[in-house]
Image (cartoon, rainbow, N blue to C red; front, side, top):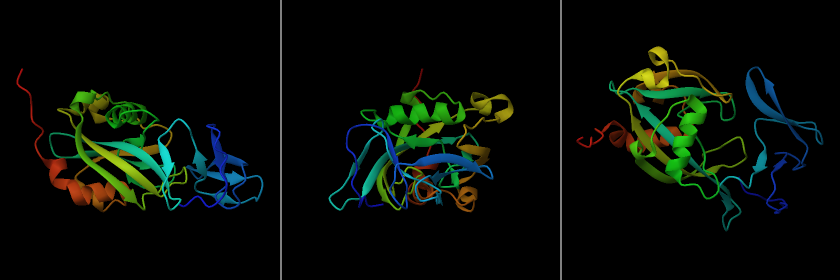
Amino acid sequence: MKIDFPLVRDHTFREYCLHCHAEAITWIVVDGRKCCTCASCGREAERAVVIDPRISWWTDADGEYWHESAGVFVRDRGGRFLFFQRTAFPYRLTVPAGHVESGEEPRCAAARELWEEVGMRGAEGDLRLVADEYLRGDVCRRGSDAHRWHAFLLEIDEHRESGVQGEVTVNEEGEAPVWLTLDQARSGRPTFAVERIIEQYSERLLAAVPRIAE
């Protein structure tokens, strides 16, 4: 999305209506999905233009609004990965992921999102970088259509890290966690970024993770 309206650049948190650009946004839940409504124009939208000084964002020379994100592909010994359905836009299949905070290292962000979204502890040293891509077309509920995406791989021995018998508790922006092969995930309507990472980096995602001898 290109920012074609004046922004108040005072390093404060602001939310603008996608349609009329008024700062009159209220977030609501409709049929289990998070969306927003504008008190100024009265229209509903799946997302808003959110300017948050806490996260890494910028606009390029063409006015394109960019965010930086980090995500973790959690793989078990059977070659299956942890996915869940997003209940906030985009309403698709995803992996634990989120925005990189201002001044935060992507690896730290990935570990933080892993804990915040699915309650998994992953030591930063166990996260293996798979991809670092600038993705145009990767939309988010905060109004950006372009993200620099850092994808990491975490291999786990058993599912007990995520709860009894592999159960995973997802935060309020997700539901229905499931362990899938990459082929199964492709047919499950994944987010743009997840689909792109799988398409371009499946060999890295499935490669054996080197083990350091004790």
